[in-house]
Amino acid sequence: MPALLRLGVEMKRLLLVALLTCGVGMAMATPARILLVRHAEKMDDGTRDPSLSAEGRARAEVLATLMGEHHVTDVFTSQYQRTIQTAAPGVAAHDLRATVVEAQKPAALLELVHALPPSAVALIVGHSNTVPDLAHELGAEDVAPMGEDEYDRIVILHLDPAEGEVTSRVVRYPPSS
View: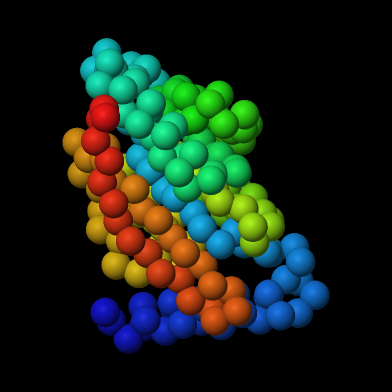
């Protein structure tokens, strides 16, 4: 990792610790765990806002089960129906509400996530071109770009504000169980 990039990550960690140990910490609590996924498989209908395909709907059902296993408390999607449809089965099954944030406004999404209490577990359903960047902005290192045909990756971030550390792991989930 280049020294300048490493310095940026260390500075983010120090800033997170500083914010959480002073008065501003109340406004920027940050949840202990964040799950980031790309929307499930979409139809190839030539539109800018396609619905999920049958395989995508099956994957969304699996994600609903995983949301329960991870005790997700807060859900964020973009304005596109494929992200909303990916989260919908879990939102319905676990009596949650999804907050829609424009995909082109990552700073607004990050502000909402940072405002969650430490006990929260957030799910962010994004896109191949937003998930890796969001994970990096939340403190994850070495998050690989997502391929246009990659729908099975979940990036799980564990945040330890007391230590200023973020650990991440990648898991894969099948389209149906």
